Amino acid sequence: MNTKLKAILCNDDGINAPGIYNLFEALHDHVDITIVAPAEDQSCKGLGISIPRSGYIEAEKVAWANGVESWKVFGTPADCIKFALHYLVKQPPNFIISGINNGSNAGRNIMYSGTVGAVIQGTFCNVPGIAFSCTYDDDVEKFKNAQQYILKIVNHFHKHKMPKGTLINVNFPTYIEGKTVGIKMAKQGKSYWNGRIGSDVKLKGTNKYPILDSWDMHDESEDSDIYLLTQGYITCAPIHVEDLTDHIHHKQHKEEFEKVFL
Image (cartoon, rainbow, N blue to C red):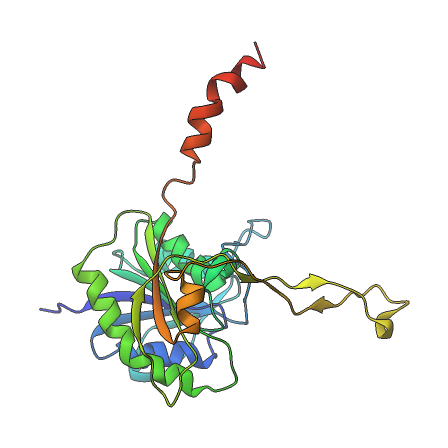
Protein backbone atom coordinates (compact mmCIF):
# COMPACT_ATOMS: atom_id res chain seq x y z
CA MET A 1 0.00 0.00 0.00
CA ASN A 2 1.39 3.42 -0.99
CA THR A 3 1.48 5.58 2.11
CA LYS A 4 3.58 8.37 0.63
CA LEU A 5 2.43 11.92 1.01
CA LYS A 6 1.08 13.44 -2.19
CA ALA A 7 2.08 16.94 -3.24
CA ILE A 8 1.81 19.30 -6.18
CA LEU A 9 5.00 21.29 -6.75
CA CYS A 10 4.79 24.76 -8.24
CA ASN A 11 6.79 27.99 -8.34
CA ASP A 12 6.72 31.43 -9.95
CA ASP A 13 10.23 31.50 -11.46
CA GLY A 14 9.18 29.07 -14.19
CA ILE A 15 9.46 25.33 -14.69
CA ASN A 16 13.11 25.58 -15.81
CA ALA A 17 14.26 27.56 -12.75
CA PRO A 18 16.83 25.78 -10.55
CA GLY A 19 14.84 26.20 -7.34
CA ILE A 20 12.04 23.82 -8.35
CA TYR A 21 14.59 21.13 -9.26
CA ASN A 22 16.08 21.38 -5.78
CA LEU A 23 12.61 21.27 -4.25
CA PHE A 24 11.97 18.08 -6.22
CA GLU A 25 15.32 16.59 -5.15
CA ALA A 26 14.50 17.29 -1.50
CA LEU A 27 11.17 15.44 -1.65
CA HIS A 28 10.94 12.87 -4.42
CA ASP A 29 12.18 9.85 -2.41
CA HIS A 30 9.48 10.37 0.20
CA VAL A 31 6.62 12.21 -1.53
CA ASP A 32 4.43 11.27 -4.50
CA ILE A 33 4.91 14.36 -6.67
CA THR A 34 3.08 16.03 -9.53
CA ILE A 35 4.78 19.12 -10.96
CA VAL A 36 2.69 21.94 -12.42
CA ALA A 37 4.62 25.17 -12.94
CA PRO A 38 4.50 28.23 -15.20
CA ALA A 39 6.06 27.89 -18.62
CA GLU A 40 7.80 31.24 -18.11
CA ASP A 41 8.87 33.50 -15.25
CA GLN A 42 5.77 34.75 -13.41
CA SER A 43 7.51 36.53 -10.52
CA CYS A 44 5.48 39.17 -8.67
CA LYS A 45 2.19 37.97 -10.19
CA GLY A 46 0.79 37.34 -6.71
CA LEU A 47 -2.60 35.62 -6.75
CA GLY A 48 -3.34 36.81 -10.28
CA ILE A 49 -5.26 34.47 -12.57
CA SER A 50 -6.08 34.39 -16.28
CA ILE A 51 -9.57 35.66 -16.99
CA PRO A 52 -11.67 33.57 -19.37
CA ARG A 53 -11.74 35.90 -22.38
CA SER A 54 -10.15 33.33 -24.65
CA GLY A 55 -12.15 30.48 -23.14
CA TYR A 56 -9.16 28.21 -22.47
CA ILE A 57 -5.76 27.91 -20.88
CA GLU A 58 -2.72 26.32 -22.52
CA ALA A 59 -0.67 23.59 -20.85
CA GLU A 60 1.85 21.02 -22.08
CA LYS A 61 3.33 17.89 -20.57
CA VAL A 62 7.11 18.00 -20.14
CA ALA A 63 9.69 15.32 -19.42
CA TRP A 64 10.96 15.09 -15.84
CA ALA A 65 13.34 12.86 -13.90
CA ASN A 66 12.01 9.52 -12.60
CA GLY A 67 9.03 9.74 -14.96
CA VAL A 68 7.29 12.19 -12.62
CA GLU A 69 4.20 13.72 -14.20
CA SER A 70 5.10 17.30 -15.04
CA TRP A 71 3.27 20.10 -16.83
CA LYS A 72 4.09 23.63 -17.88
CA VAL A 73 1.18 26.06 -17.88
CA PHE A 74 1.10 29.23 -19.95
CA GLY A 75 -0.27 31.29 -17.12
CA THR A 76 0.26 32.35 -13.52
CA PRO A 77 1.13 30.18 -10.50
CA ALA A 78 -2.50 30.36 -9.36
CA ASP A 79 -3.53 29.16 -12.84
CA CYS A 80 -1.18 26.20 -12.35
CA ILE A 81 -2.88 25.19 -9.12
CA LYS A 82 -6.33 25.55 -10.63
CA PHE A 83 -5.26 23.36 -13.55
CA ALA A 84 -3.75 20.78 -11.21
CA LEU A 85 -6.64 20.56 -8.75
CA HIS A 86 -9.53 20.96 -11.20
CA TYR A 87 -8.20 18.85 -14.06
CA LEU A 88 -5.14 16.74 -13.33
CA VAL A 89 -5.49 15.02 -9.96
CA LYS A 90 -8.38 12.76 -9.05
CA GLN A 91 -8.02 13.31 -5.30
CA PRO A 92 -6.70 16.40 -3.47
CA PRO A 93 -3.04 16.08 -2.46
CA ASN A 94 -1.76 16.49 1.07
CA PHE A 95 0.10 19.68 0.15
CA ILE A 96 0.76 22.37 -2.38
CA ILE A 97 4.52 23.02 -2.10
CA SER A 98 5.88 26.05 -3.92
CA GLY A 99 9.42 27.29 -4.61
CA ILE A 100 12.23 27.34 -4.02
CA ASN A 101 11.92 31.02 -4.93
CA ASN A 102 14.96 33.03 -5.93
CA GLY A 103 14.43 35.95 -3.55
CA SER A 104 13.01 36.42 -0.10
CA ASN A 105 9.26 36.47 0.47
CA ALA A 106 9.64 37.75 4.00
CA GLY A 107 7.73 40.84 5.12
CA ARG A 108 5.15 42.39 2.86
CA ASN A 109 6.80 40.85 -0.19
CA ILE A 110 4.28 38.08 0.43
CA MET A 111 1.55 40.27 -1.08
CA TYR A 112 3.29 40.29 -4.49
CA SER A 113 4.71 36.79 -4.51
CA GLY A 114 3.52 34.30 -7.12
CA THR A 115 5.30 31.61 -5.10
CA VAL A 116 3.00 32.35 -2.19
CA GLY A 117 0.07 33.00 -4.55
CA ALA A 118 0.17 29.35 -5.64
CA VAL A 119 -0.14 28.24 -2.04
CA ILE A 120 -2.94 30.70 -1.29
CA GLN A 121 -4.87 29.31 -4.27
CA GLY A 122 -4.43 25.87 -2.73
CA THR A 123 -5.87 27.01 0.59
CA PHE A 124 -8.92 28.34 -1.24
CA CYS A 125 -9.39 24.74 -2.45
CA ASN A 126 -8.87 23.38 1.10
CA VAL A 127 -5.40 22.02 0.34
CA PRO A 128 -2.73 23.13 2.85
CA GLY A 129 0.50 24.52 1.51
CA ILE A 130 4.05 25.62 2.17
CA ALA A 131 5.99 28.26 0.21
CA PHE A 132 9.80 28.10 0.24
CA SER A 133 12.02 31.06 -0.69
CA CYS A 134 15.70 31.97 -0.46
CA THR A 135 17.19 35.40 0.12
CA TYR A 136 18.29 36.74 -3.26
CA ASP A 137 21.91 36.37 -4.38
CA ASP A 138 23.71 34.91 -7.38
CA ASP A 139 24.87 31.73 -5.62
CA VAL A 140 22.75 28.79 -6.85
CA GLU A 141 24.27 26.66 -4.07
CA LYS A 142 21.74 28.28 -1.73
CA PHE A 143 19.05 26.00 -3.16
CA LYS A 144 21.11 22.91 -2.37
CA ASN A 145 21.76 24.23 1.11
CA ALA A 146 18.02 24.58 1.63
CA GLN A 147 17.26 21.01 0.53
CA GLN A 148 18.27 19.39 3.81
CA TYR A 149 15.52 21.22 5.73
CA ILE A 150 12.57 20.91 3.37
CA LEU A 151 11.40 17.36 4.07
CA LYS A 152 11.65 17.92 7.84
CA ILE A 153 9.45 21.00 7.55
CA VAL A 154 6.90 19.22 5.34
CA ASN A 155 6.75 16.24 7.72
CA HIS A 156 6.27 18.53 10.70
CA PHE A 157 3.24 20.19 9.14
CA HIS A 158 1.84 16.85 8.07
CA LYS A 159 2.02 15.68 11.68
CA HIS A 160 0.84 19.01 13.11
CA LYS A 161 -2.04 19.94 10.84
CA MET A 162 -2.57 23.55 9.82
CA PRO A 163 -5.97 25.12 10.51
CA LYS A 164 -8.21 25.70 7.52
CA GLY A 165 -7.05 28.78 5.62
CA THR A 166 -3.53 28.78 7.08
CA LEU A 167 -0.42 28.46 4.93
CA ILE A 168 3.25 28.37 5.86
CA ASN A 169 5.77 30.86 4.48
CA VAL A 170 9.37 29.65 4.84
CA ASN A 171 12.40 31.80 4.02
CA PHE A 172 16.05 30.75 3.98
CA PRO A 173 18.77 33.29 4.88
CA THR A 174 22.03 34.02 3.13
CA TYR A 175 24.30 31.19 4.24
CA ILE A 176 27.74 31.59 5.71
CA GLU A 177 29.87 28.57 4.75
CA GLY A 178 26.69 26.69 3.84
CA LYS A 179 25.32 26.88 7.38
CA THR A 180 22.39 28.46 9.18
CA VAL A 181 22.21 29.31 12.88
CA GLY A 182 18.81 27.64 13.34
CA ILE A 183 15.12 27.84 12.54
CA LYS A 184 12.47 30.06 14.10
CA MET A 185 8.69 30.25 13.98
CA ALA A 186 8.34 33.91 13.04
CA LYS A 187 5.82 36.65 12.55
CA GLN A 188 5.45 38.10 9.06
CA GLY A 189 7.40 41.37 8.98
CA LYS A 190 6.52 44.72 7.39
CA SER A 191 9.53 45.70 5.27
CA TYR A 192 9.44 44.87 1.58
CA TRP A 193 10.95 45.53 -1.82
CA ASN A 194 9.00 48.40 -3.36
CA GLY A 195 10.27 49.26 -6.81
CA ARG A 196 9.55 52.90 -7.56
CA ILE A 197 8.87 54.53 -10.89
CA GLY A 198 11.44 57.21 -11.64
CA SER A 199 13.10 58.99 -14.54
CA ASP A 200 16.24 58.49 -16.61
CA VAL A 201 17.78 61.02 -18.99
CA LYS A 202 18.62 58.14 -21.32
CA LEU A 203 14.89 57.48 -21.73
CA LYS A 204 13.91 61.12 -22.23
CA GLY A 205 11.64 61.48 -25.22
CA THR A 206 10.39 57.90 -24.99
CA ASN A 207 7.32 56.49 -23.27
CA LYS A 208 9.50 54.42 -20.92
CA TYR A 209 9.99 55.10 -17.21
CA PRO A 210 12.49 53.09 -15.19
CA ILE A 211 11.62 50.89 -12.24
CA LEU A 212 14.11 51.82 -9.52
CA ASP A 213 15.36 49.24 -7.03
CA SER A 214 14.07 50.30 -3.62
CA TRP A 215 13.19 48.89 -0.21
CA ASP A 216 10.60 50.22 2.22
CA MET A 217 12.16 49.56 5.60
CA HIS A 218 10.09 49.49 8.79
CA ASP A 219 10.87 48.99 12.44
CA GLU A 220 10.80 45.23 12.93
CA SER A 221 10.25 43.20 16.09
CA GLU A 222 12.88 40.64 16.98
CA ASP A 223 10.42 37.83 16.20
CA SER A 224 9.71 39.07 12.66
CA ASP A 225 10.95 37.10 9.67
CA ILE A 226 12.72 40.20 8.32
CA TYR A 227 14.82 40.58 11.49
CA LEU A 228 15.49 36.87 12.03
CA LEU A 229 16.73 36.38 8.46
CA THR A 230 19.39 39.03 9.08
CA GLN A 231 20.52 37.00 12.09
CA GLY A 232 20.99 33.88 9.95
CA TYR A 233 17.82 32.00 10.91
CA ILE A 234 15.48 30.08 8.66
CA THR A 235 12.06 31.62 9.28
CA CYS A 236 8.68 29.95 9.19
CA ALA A 237 5.64 32.26 9.36
CA PRO A 238 2.06 30.95 9.55
CA ILE A 239 -0.25 33.10 7.39
CA HIS A 240 -4.04 33.01 7.73
CA VAL A 241 -6.21 33.87 4.71
CA GLU A 242 -9.52 32.30 5.73
CA ASP A 243 -11.12 35.45 7.17
CA LEU A 244 -9.90 38.84 5.90
CA THR A 245 -12.41 40.94 7.84
CA ASP A 246 -11.19 43.67 10.21
CA HIS A 247 -13.52 42.59 13.01
CA ILE A 248 -12.64 45.48 15.33
CA HIS A 249 -13.51 48.08 12.69
CA HIS A 250 -16.64 46.15 11.74
CA LYS A 251 -17.84 46.09 15.35
CA GLN A 252 -16.98 49.73 16.06
CA HIS A 253 -18.44 51.29 12.90
CA LYS A 254 -21.19 48.98 11.63
CA GLU A 255 -24.12 50.65 13.38
CA GLU A 256 -23.06 54.24 12.68
CA PHE A 257 -22.20 53.51 9.03
CA GLU A 258 -25.55 51.87 8.29
CA LYS A 259 -27.42 54.91 9.66
CA VAL A 260 -25.94 57.01 6.84
CA PHE A 261 -28.37 55.39 4.41
CA LEU A 262 -31.50 55.70 6.55
